[in-house]
Length: 149
Ligand SMILES: CC(C)(COP(=O)(O)OP(=O)(O)OC[C@H]1O[C@@H](n2cnc3c(N)ncnc32)[C@H](O)[C@@H]1OP(=O)(O)O)[C@@H](O)C(=O)NCCC(=O)NCCS
Image 1 (tube, rainbow, N blue to C red):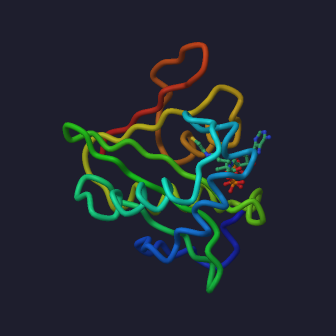
Image 2: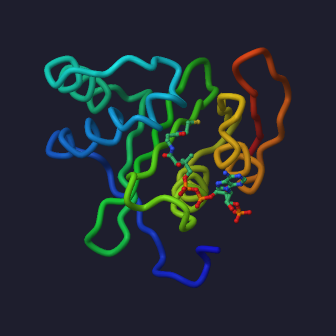
């Protein structure tokens, strides 16, 4: 699924994406699957986004399907290891967007890439696998995925 639709383009996120990112982040399913499951308030979200956009060790992109923002993917670098996280707009799920934004992000990175996926997040585990990552470990809450490029 997803290979026969428009190519999906990643563009760098900006502060004007604050509202959509907050809406996606506070979506019930996103919260359920995130490390921090609390609802995020607008003021702390804008501070967080400003810090991310100004940090050379963090890359935040919006996946665009034509004119429609359909998801976001972030890469955080720590000691030369990139950790990825992603979310798809609630209205754009189940049509291959998740896999395509993660693929496009990985294409921009070199070195070691990781993702921590909550147990039960079957779609994200499948995304990690389809994008070339291998599950290295798991604990009670998370599965730990890795690849080298
Ligand atoms: C999880 C999430 C990213 C999935 O995005 P999506 O665009 O709907 O996923 P895709 O359509 O790319 O599907 C990914 C794969 O999972 C499969 N899949 C989806 N739901 C599934 C389910 N319930 N059970 C089994 N497989 C499932 C799809 O068939 C697809 O597999 P394929 O590539 O072999 O066809 C999206 O639902 C989301 O944003 N959820 C909330 C936030 C979140 O979970 N973020 C990830 C944190 S690591």
